[in-house]
Length: 293
Image 1: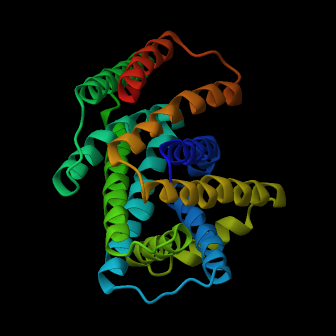
Image 2 (image 1 turned 90 degrees about the vertical axis):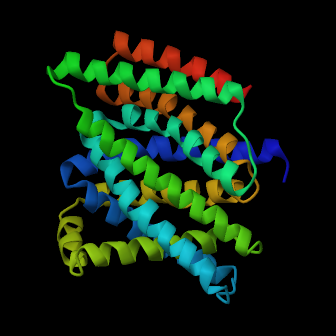
């Protein structure tokens, strides 16, 4: 697979997830981050399961591959997305997704240790720009609320770190089983996330069902559509790209998400970006330019 195709897959995945983040944020606030994450996984596991059966995928995989993918699901899809959705409720999607710019550093380090991949000087400078960008948004929250909302940024950073670890484990699973396809990988990861929910609360399905049944048909349809595009399609495209890509370069594409979702967030709330958002996005674009060089 050529680089252009790989990056187009990753970019499409990122735009789908970023757009869906607005809906994830809305229902995380209305119900809870855990409920929204459970909804995402329950719908996704059905979609990936049907796709896996349709493609007649073989489940005869090494136990180590199952171990990597299930652990990836628990850490990335269950815990990582929970903390990310929790940050959505206070920071909003665009500011939370800014922290995805740290994933190239995390995964670049992993790629250097395990795969011999390196981080260039430009990538290192880009990461510094992203850190400055985050500090601008932290200061913005202080100006807005009168206190430093570091806790919310730590939720987002912790969630994104867990997601990065999940990606590392998934890439390792690909290396152990090169014939793996994206639907199978995602299905097993969703099983891992489901195991995580059961470990947190064995009876979670009953609480989830009560809240889901309280939704109007229109809301249910919106959630299904959002999960299908923002999870099923997004993960399918992303993990297909992950199988072949340079880890740090691939995840640098994730930094396009905040630009897109920030624009959509302003439309959603019918307001213009403030001066801190313009400044943050300016620094962000410099970082993006350096990352892509």
